[in-house]
Length: 426
Image (cartoon, rainbow, N blue to C red; front, side, top):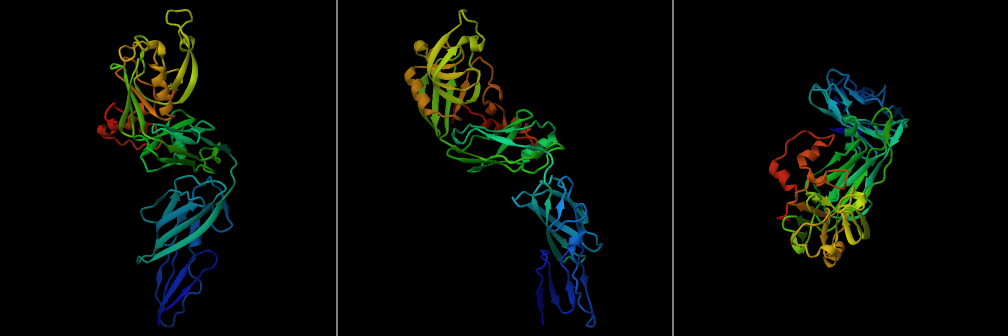
């Protein structure tokens, strides 16, 4: 007759099955013990908890130092570790390395402070019979400065070109430390996309997809850095999550040679507008730009862009329906004074000018995060950072090089090219 007994005491999760006179202990270093009819069954099954050590021990009620690595050891010569899973109460996993012979496992990623962990260890004995042990432990409270993350932009609805930003409360220079931070910054979208963070400087990161966000997507951003050690001075602190909505796919292409701006919405051309762009010496920047904001009225003065007052090129104008694309003062705006040149010549100081009627329509159609690309200008290319969002002017391969988690894989150049906006198709 086969008899089965289950043991549920002390959180050890161990069980034993009695089949004739054979005892199987499911634990680290467990072995199969055969006995004759005269040999009693063991009253004390092997306890794998003694084999799991972190500064001495891990177990219910234990508080361990989060700055020390976690180690699991199979002490018996007959048993080996086959798998170790360590996860905290918020679902964060601890990565680790298992020795080739299964004798030892150690963590390779930081533990969080002031957190509760569950560790599950799978084993097998010399005859391949499996065992498992589940233990829990908590880590101590942090004694280091908290590193917070401020995500941007503000919650709302944006165009398909809007990057996500992350501003850290302290600079991180070391690449390995940057990897710890970056790994904890989570961006999820519905529908899903391939994307990556890029370190703009020691305290700021931008996230963008490989291509643009899908129209009408939902983007959720959060940090799992809380309690995680970054360096001897810094440990992650709580940070507010962010949810963004993505609107229609709206892309405008300003062709400086053709003096025309073409607007596409969800893949269809919806309007062509005669425009003027930057004249010689003031050429409009080529490249992809992201709408930064809209101003119903804005005063534009030449002195703010380095043109001396009183010179032949100086100006001081009140401008309507101004859509900003750089922080240095490049706009798409109403320019009633140049209507005669719109569609025929480039006479502006770098902005894209159009009639008041067309500017009002454009102003009412676009939103922050929509895309404007200038092509066929004699000007330079929009810089990636520092003057707005020029993020899309980097190929995907170059963008990935700015990630601390980049693996150095080469992308297909044709794929990179598809990541860039072109006048057609859209």
